Length: 328
Image (cartoon, rainbow, N blue to C red):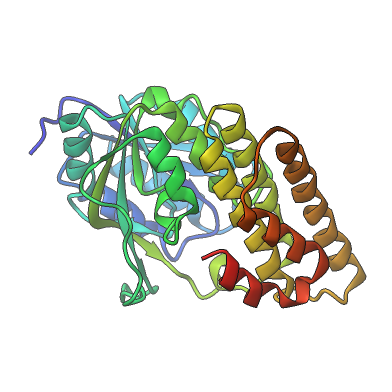
């Protein structure tokens, strides 16, 4: 399908995943596109992962291991990106895995369309590999090319999660090197997705779910909503500011509506009676309102956005119901 004359670097952050790391690495070693540089970034865990990584490096010359102090997922990704020598780069989380023909299909699509980023759908699976992707969940990525603005716009669509994650993409290295992940932040992909797409002239989509996203029993995705997740507001606020500053006003307003809806919907998920929780929630509402008023001074806002903001401020307890009615 594609000549293997161009190296793909694959960055794998590794931390406390000794139960999963072998499945992940094996899925990379079994790729039909074999010209890979597999960079295992040991992020200072105290389980057997460092030893497992070193053992793999002895078995296959394509594997490079970086041992470093614990700095979190973003720091590990950045370290791997800096060490990459390929013409293309991909990220994969160490508890996930991919189909054997993933990179063959992604590099073929990317080169065929002369795109800067290839992005594919993914399938949600259990630890045992059983699919748990909801039957009514529509996979959003189509077999077509997308402009930068289209891709950014899809970040606030009903199936935005297919567009926001860093690990279901293949990047030209020049694009990957321009964006670093924010160290010390959760929701790191929310902070960076629009930046990657804005750097790309063309994005090519692949409808097949080549990536297997594993939901672990103790995964952050299976835990109860925490006040720490409100940092998501900061990430999307940054995205809104970026859009408004770069001539994507319509997209920026769509994100503004998205954010007001999010703040309303999480109100009932938090223990809002807890003083510290309430203070943190109010801080992020204020962050949103500051941005809202700043945009309102320069741009005409639509009725839906104004109504959503009014309800957020004055009747947050009715938030979920109101947001469903006015922000469809």
